Image 1 (cartoon, rainbow, N blue to C red):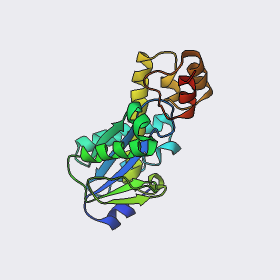
Image 2: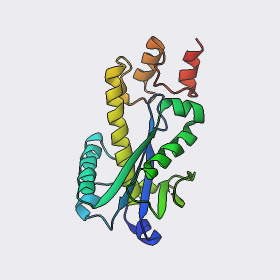
Image 3: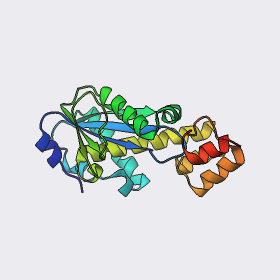
Image 4: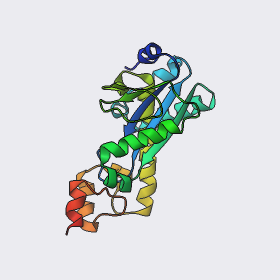
Length: 205
């Protein structure tokens, strides 16, 4: 389980940063940045982990508590995104870094340092320290991973109502068998990502 040790060691205002949605064939890539104003209470910390290790119900519950904690002044957070069009223009890594930049830039207070999940440092408005498997080690990164994932899933559910037939609410744009079959049947929509082989191959037909 993640803890607050990395944040305490870094000192100052520490933002945890993580993304959701690098692997899908459609939709935005989302990032979140979270600053705890001190060690989070145990009742909150126990809900936090790498979002991929939590069920959808657990992520939603944790997201509700995180938003309530933000309203209570326990933390600050912000979310940023890069669109499918930006992903096609920039590539997925650079678009992910753009979403992270936007998330950190939207924080109410500027962090002294950002702990970023992974090993590729984005250019942010503050110094960056990369933490491999950070969403399993740092509470602020874990919180960011949950907020990014839940926000993106909700966005894909809204997209499903605008572009029915693809099943976005069920697979969130990931390359499931259902999604691939819909792509073959309907062709790509404007929210499918150019530069991803299954989408580009259909665009050439």
